[in-house]
Image 1 (cartoon, rainbow, N blue to C red):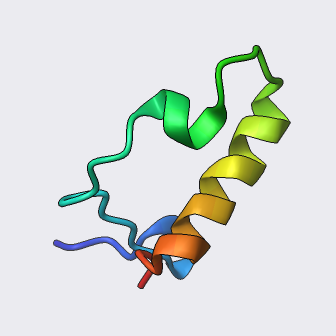
Image 2: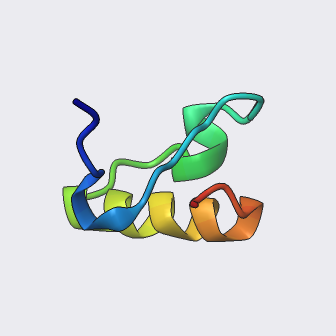
Length: 49
C-alpha cells in the first residue's frame, strides 16, 4: 500500500549537487531557519511535486 506523502508534497533531491553548506551557509542556524532555507531551496530548484 502506497501512502500519500504528508502535506501532499513529494521532494526528491536526486541529481542535486549542492552541499549542505551551500544550502544552509556556514554559520549555526536554528531548526526553524533550516526549514525556511530548505523550502527556499526546493522552490528555487523546482523540485517539489
